[in-house]
Length: 137
Image (cartoon, rainbow, N blue to C red; front, side, top):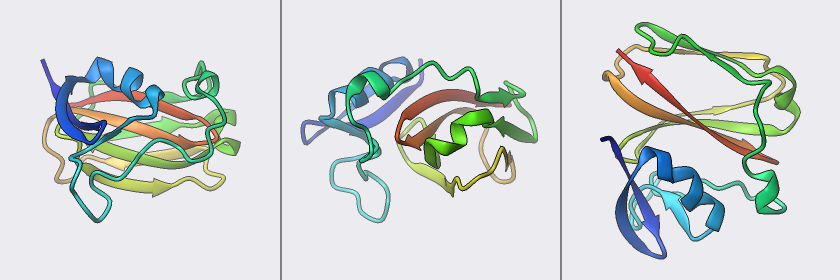
């Protein structure tokens, strides 16, 4: 089972990918080690979130394909672009691999390039926060 390193109440722990969303909702955790600088270990929950009911809405407008992917991932944002500000690609150790500012884009393509095969998280942040899992083969 793939694990993600998070900082939980100031202490680093490893949790399953499926538990990341629940930890971020509480507001006392963030992805990465507790003592890392320069974007790694940075608090990834949105500063725009008003309450936890808005953090993980149904995200029917976002389409991510293909999964699993071999050469690129296409993300179609639909109407969510007005609420989303940033997209972060995070590996299973909690390291931020790529940060993308979302302006008015309706589609984002992430090329495989040098990325290792495995499981990654896409963290969408803005007025809402949405987490999606992707797989690269």
